[in-house]
Length: 221
Image 1 (cartoon, helix red, strand yellow):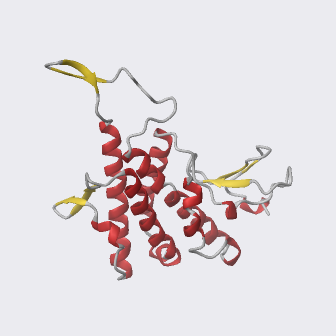
Image 2 (cartoon, rainbow, N blue to C red):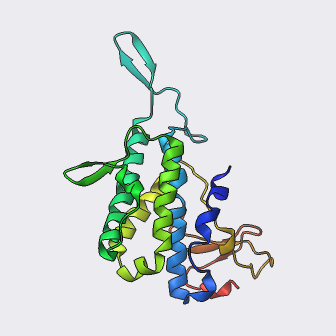
Image 3 (cartoon, rainbow, N blue to C red):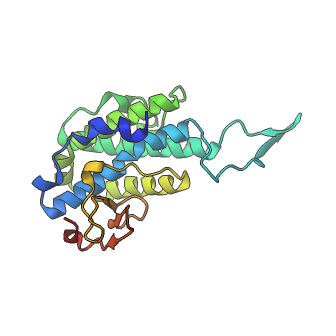
């Protein structure tokens, strides 16, 4: 099952665009689009897959018996731990401020002096995906309440990490079909606002390539 198919249950967790103000809608879309990338990023990094064009077969480790291929990509382990820790810390802050118990998956975190530092070693790629999915679903279910908290610095830290890792591991962004708008150039409902690859919120038509400036979201019906 594809990552997009596995995301279908989260899509209905919040109200559609039409019921929000333009500013609230754009915040919500940015919030959702960044969080949507987390489960597949955790899975890819946890399984230590090598993305297209990124394999380096020359990476070897030396020892008494000569050189041998590295058993894993250490940077992937570190990146996975960093993302998991950032997500757990963000959820912990949200839960505390909302006085709402954090989801159980947050407990699967190794910490130092009470600060999240990463994912436990026993967690496989599939389990990492499922745990990440449970965590983002918890956040998206509370999106309107989270927005009112105004946690801009915490969100910026987490979202910048998601954008960086999405680019590093060449993971195709998860898109929500329900978020696509109709293009005023070709007429197709193929316009997607990009918050992950560029981080600017520019809208791009996946059919004809027409672009819409982020400060003029109203041009897309």
